[in-house]
Amino acid sequence: MSQPSPRTSPTPFDLITMGRVGVDLYPLQTGVPLAKAETFGKFLGGSPANVAVAAARLGRRTALISRTGADPFGDYLHDALRDFGVCDRWVTPVAAYPTPLTFCEVFPPDDFPLYFYRRPKAPDLEIHPHELDLGAIRDARVFWATGTGLCEEPSRAATLAALAARGRRDVTVLDLDWRPLFWGGEGGASGAGGRTGPAAMAAARPHYAAALAHATVAVGNADECEVATGERAPHAAARALLAAGVELAVVKRGPEGVLAVHRDGTRAEVPPVKVEVVNGLGAGDAFGGALCHGLLAGWPLERTLTYANAAGALVATRLSCSAAMPTGEEIEGLLGGGAVASGGVGRSGASGAYGGSRRSGASGESDASRAAGPEAGSSGPGPGVSRPGPGVSRPGAGPSGAEGVAPRTEVPRP
Image 1 (cartoon, rainbow, N blue to C red):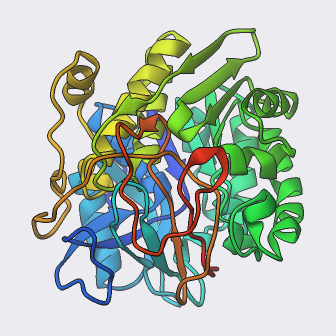
Image 2 (tube, rainbow, N blue to C red; image 1 turned 180 degrees about the vertical axis):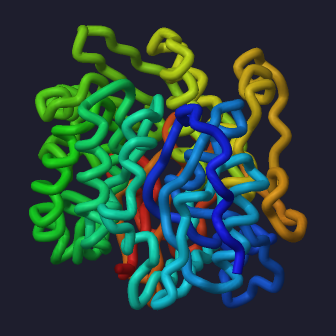
């Protein structure tokens, strides 16, 4: 069984993320349902893990706090984290539960159903407060926690303990990361939440409020802001997040770009980047890693958002998530008007090669929901990814969700 790498230096990390990790198994063809897919690529997955990888690609010293199963897929995740330059010493095994698997279907530009296998319980929800290295968490220049970490004990208590240990110092980020079915909902927030959506939101909101009281930065889309604050409209949501205690509110607006408002009155609105989308699932994580990079560098807010938008757009042009995270040179090249090479898998950490076709167009994050299988969900491209031309939709796809974007699928998962 692979073991976490030992501590090698007392130097504080630039970024520590905490929460989900698992194995992504993505078909190497686009426009093909899972029932027809024949070959798959294997990738490191889980949003906090991907954010750590994204920042590491930009030269930052990063680490992940999470748990895996005591199984070969857990071994693979340790190897992948190390290969990407992410410290894995706080990624520990749970004998009782298997490492989570996630499958997706790839229907560019805006339909990417996800099928999660996290039952009976995901190991990353078994993080206990007494296991945390609170000194390292306190000393990290940036700490990144997620809303999903609040959905179940003991992860909820551990997430709140880690945030409290920060003492609102430096950059303490809460990624609102709303996964309604982890809270008993059927789909997205608001009217798209299904019969149990309002109850799920009501169950989650007090825990989000408790976490926001310790955070200095909040990041979320319209659904996530509504869950946390009751507000969906971007400027109202930003004001509500500031009122909840953060210093910087970042509101992802999908095809309309990104809004950020600081307590000192600074604000920035950045338009989307037009790209040809292959798979939009990792764009938000690339945005998060690049956001951390810009905040660490002390860049002006507009420059930071522009850079993060470009990082997300580049990942949307590639099949995988973690293996697709861009380098600084690639981001600067896109911002400088350079060509984007679309359709590849990404870098090391993937098995197989991407040989599928791609279609023009992209869309932003979405809100609508439908049911589809035992444990599934989907997401469109992340923040700041725009549709450059007529969209290509999956046959039989439902109507557009809120803000003129494509449906988001969320199906039962713990």
